[in-house]
Image (tube, rainbow, N blue to C red):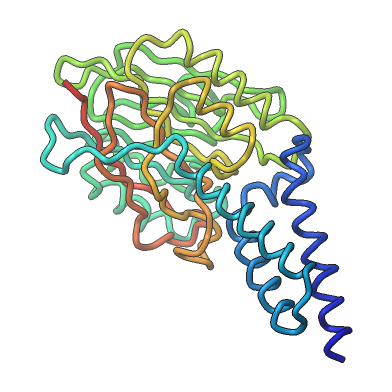
Length: 310
């Protein structure tokens, strides 16, 4: 029985390690789910290999343990690769962004979501899967008179950007042919500093190559954007993803470490960060915090405080 259990653990762990290691040979979109969860699966493999080693002192179990530690360690390095130290909380000027995928069918919590937006003290709000917010627009317009999305500049109501300050320029674009108008960019004068607020909602990475194509389209937009950029959105992937790593490198974007886990909400802090906030210097992130209550959504929202480096 002991040997049988050892063999079963070894077979299952080897298969999982093989899937995780495939990224070092080629990037296959069908395995994107495992790439985003590389840290989690890697830790699971460490425990499995350690259990196998306890069952039987054998070189193969030790080899599995070493490989699992290496893969997990590399995932942590990738999570940190484009992270920078947060700016001091006392840094000025200080601005705030609220970004939140509220779930397009989450109409039962429209009032609570409206309360969150109204009380957030955010200068700019970016909402994804926005239909539940439409019933709150009358009272929100009093706080955020400037708006893009849900009938303004586009008929679609997936992405919505609200601002307390007028737009210097604004644009709406499609990142791929799969979904229309899921990218918004608005340049806003923040006390004499023009800042480009970008909002992106990407396709799931295991839908063929659309995710990678959308990231390249996003890079094409950002490389001709001269203003400091604050990019927030539902990327449906962690920064461990190979195409996310390449995207961050191409565009010089930075994030905090560790990023707050936003999905799935049932996992709370043990989930993964697929909703991100990226800044390009001279912008510096002061903090990126997860809202306490997902309010019926399958994502947690993020409150981001940031500053402009002198």
